[in-house]
Amino acid sequence: MDDARLEFDRMYAAIANSQVYRQIVHRAFPDLSEWLTPYSAIDLALLERIAQILNVGPNSSFIDLACGLGGPGLWVCERTGASLVGVDFAGAGINAARELARQRGTARASFVDADATHTCLPAKTFDGLMSIDAIQFMDGLSVATEIARLLRPGGIVALTTWEALADDLPIATVAKDYCAVFKAAGFSIRHYESLANFRERENALYASVEFYRDALREEIGEDANPLLEEAHDGLARAKEPPRVRKIFLAARCD
Ligand SMILES: C[S@@+](CC[C@H](N)C(=O)[O-])C[C@H]1O[C@@H](n2cnc3c(N)ncnc32)[C@H](O)[C@@H]1O
Image (cartoon, rainbow, N blue to C red; front, side, top):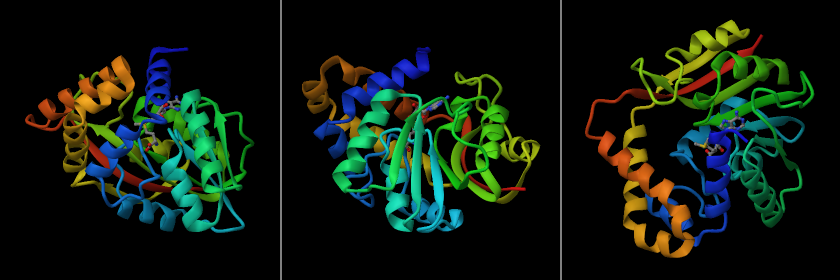
């Protein structure tokens, strides 16, 4: 298992059943349904927009690529009535997503433990694909090419990710221009937007982690450390000029 995969896997194993993590998310994002515990700074308006732009319904299917604990994709699945396949390479996230679907009685959702750049799912099968705060961790062209392979002609991808504003980011895979990446993979761009409120949302999550620091440590012990460190570093970073922008991109597979 590579380092990033191991880190996500450990984190999900620690927080999947954490009541404190649930409280952290709810304090930061009271607009989200309480069962929907993302590992990202998503907001309800954006989930609504994703559901709308994907334009899927009861007779169609979509993927949530890098679905984490499964909540955002399940929300869109319930909202639209479409069938969902969630994909993530962190097995603990996939297990938690399956359990969440079971608890919610969502029979038309399934989850696959796979790398997002080589999913092994059938080609030209899906009407839409969403992905939240994840493709920045992957080689851009590889993931865009895999998305093009999975979608039927005319299928829509709607995603959020970060774009690099500097050359020396610690995550080397963050692209500077995802429109160019998706065009190179055969997509036409339908919507591109830099999300103005993303730092406020991230900071709200970090501040909430700090607020529940002791409770989180008490509940999950040392497994809390990566989250606490991320929140601490994130709040420190917020005082500096941004080195990434968060974008919302929607594109059509031609
Ligand atoms: C910031 S989390 C977002 C999770 C989820 N989309 C959400 O909003 O809660 C990023 C996710 O990307 C997944 N990920 C990163 N690289 C991946 C890859 N190459 N293949 C599959 N999943 C990957 C991680 O396991 C993690 O679940």
